[in-house]
Length: 252
Image (cartoon, rainbow, N blue to C red; front, top):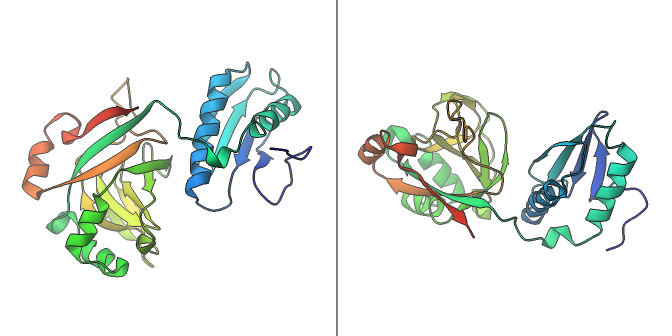
């Protein structure tokens, strides 16, 4: 795959954008796209494997990868050349997801006060409440990116009829563990807070666990999360169990 001499100031992806003196953004798409998300995850994994001196940190957003570096050790021009070489190495939009990801199964209640806006969301999606719950729990959803709060994963993508606009008004607060939906995605709230998304369920899962020195952030970008419907009573019983009844296993 041939690339131009510079990937700066391009209007079309893939595009390199310097962020300050010590950051570089590699953009694979200007809108949410499954292939671009896979590309960002796979590209970040490849950069991490390089282990370049001067590489400080990498991260991903929905469709981009970010590299933080020490310009005294890894000059920007050298980093650009290395990134261009790796970008040209393959078609990243056709890349497989990286290994060493985790499949999480998380119990959730879709009953009563646990799902105050489920009926509204189901109607907007053109579904009955029962069908909406079945679709929400039908398959694992990828953690496309983390954001808004520590450990909060944007899970997607759901089918097109779940492309629901955000509410015009904010819900003042939803509790930690709330399941909310908008724009073909689900979120398990990592902290309590306001939202413009609709609450359709509730877990007791703590995605952010600052007291856990081994894994304070439960989900990682690229992980898969499967919700499992349980009754409101069972959800409360599971709250006392490790990980609030959630299980996890390696994706091979």
